[in-house]
Length: 274
Image (tube, rainbow, N blue to C red; front, side, top):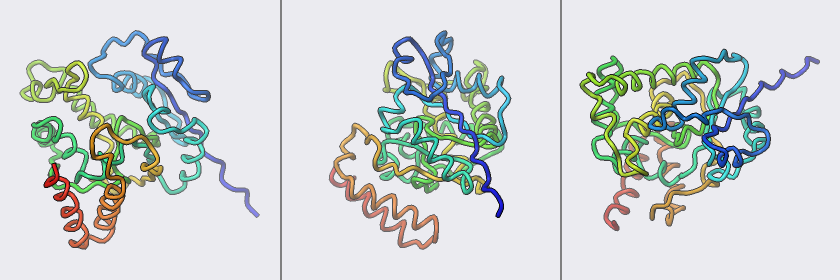
């Protein structure tokens, strides 16, 4: 008999912004130090970017970088995350732990969801993708819980992180260049928080985009319906959320048009009620 393959290492980091956020970090997590927080306008992307640009990665390992609210939003311990990643490591490159399942289920994709709260988001990102030679019909993409990522709550192999960084660095370069024709659109203040810029929410959608348009990536999602739901009234319809996600999964697996038509019917009921 041959010995089973060793389980891959899983390196999980919590981002520390202050003494208060350090106190929120659960046992087992490493600290990604962002106490100086020189670029708060980029939120989590700044310390994640700094790590990925400077630190060598173990190609056999998985990495994850979470905000201080990860444990509160998911209810998962460090051990539970590690166990899930290692259990799925033979069949996945990316493991998803995204809360707010209603925000993922009731929209065709994460860009449509973002557009609902920030009109112009799709136009701005579409223009950037076209400019870098990667045009994508963002309004037509169908994403289910196997592609949906919010808040950068995912764990991945180094190969995926490099592709993620490459895409987000194109966004970063455009936003940092005052002469770039898209800077104003990409950095537009939103109604979230104290005028959080659009670029933050675009950056958070990069993983979902890659999982949808690049079929080489294998993903596995931890059951999102057990995580925290959104603060919107959509959370009052959990059964319909499960049905909506299931219909999108069925469409992506079969391409039977009846599945996406049924999804549209469920969604129209909510629009009519609103």
